[in-house]
Length: 100
Image (cartoon, rainbow, N blue to C red; front, side, top):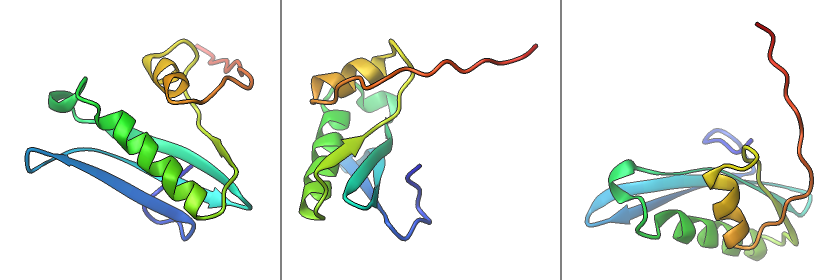
């Protein structure tokens, strides 16, 4: 998972109207970029922030030699639908069972 402390990670921040609007990260390993941690502050939603972040993350991944990118979302979520709109395609689903 991409994070601020990873040596192979790059963090991204989006600013709008002089305020931080969102952020995200990529983690690169052997030509594959994991795109994650992308979020938008509620006041800036539906203004293209997450799309701009994802596009910047994918451009940076290509510039660093990646020819594949992956991301993880909850099935059927807004995040899944948004990632598919920018070009990601579902590879598989995974059931996670939680005990009571």
